[in-house]
Image (tube, rainbow, N blue to C red; front, side):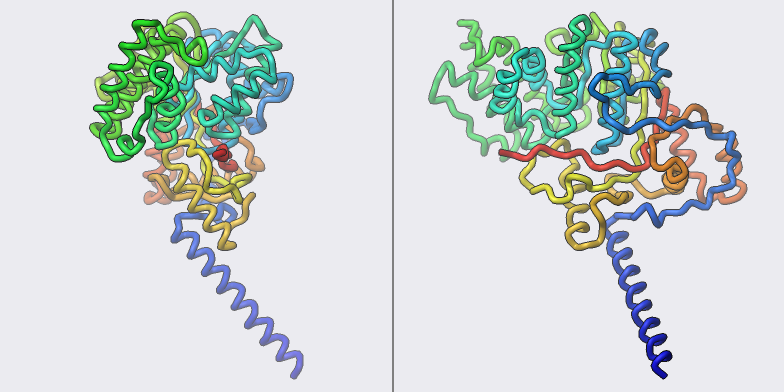
Length: 466
């Protein structure tokens, strides 16, 4: 009798536990979060020879810049091309690590003196001033006082430290940083206006003040006009700001960028943003002199950095297409890498406070969603989850790579060759309902020269506000 009671109790508890697990899983799926441990793919019948890939390290660059052996395939590319693009689908720490290693591999094999990020152009001068400061104490003071809010993630800060270390040991191959975007977030607008524009004009008039409510309330064209009027006064005396690079010419480009931000936010987001990015990259008043005189690495969203597309007026809004097909100094001399991240883990961001600098549009919602699930005990900080947000869905193509990634112990996967037609034809015969995601992925990946899969990565770590 006692044995029977134990069996019944065990059965009841097992049912309760299974029911709780099912409920938790349902809650996660409702939130668009899928534990990848439970993700399975039935596409296990493909010929192994149809996909050739090798593992690629997801570690950051090491102290002596030597852990680049798995990037030897970049040697010939580095010498033949003028611009190398590292595209991503955002917020993956391991993508930042890979970008770092690509940058220093290119500079080991050849010389790429500028890396350009998808952040506001005005930050360029401040970052490069920081990079060239030889005295560490002086550099740290400048970072804390003037650069802190311009560097939005721990990973970006670490790259700047790598560049400073590289520049000290490679004085014949100095690397600089460039920023090509407009101000898209409130944090970015606040930094540009309150840390660059306002202090400059306060030299002319110590009582000068900017009503931040004007910017938050909507279109700030009148404020742009006011900035230009004040700039004319500054030009008459060739006013230099707190640092020697803060000249009237520099402030003029900052105002141009703010005007583009205003047009983007209140007129046409895509058109005015991309128009400004192309200007910032190619106009010699901005970053154009670098593209004319040397080689560059560009890091940003993969949508921006597609190269193998037709050269029409719509596509040429995208910088990858424009630099590949139109801009004379880089035309036909680009190489694009699509780093396709699939799953994410919270990592260091699990317990980070809400008072941080937003790294980019969309990050806040993603982190809030994952932190809520973590605090509710539904996910673990270091486990991997697929997030079905921002038009990313857990389709059969991603399920296939999640499963394939397990056999490589979740290392990065460099795709050397893939027989798309054979794969799609066989899936179409066996499971025709699963072909669409493979067709779409083929069409997208063929817009790049190389594809790297990252099955899972921790999120990038935002910088906490002071």
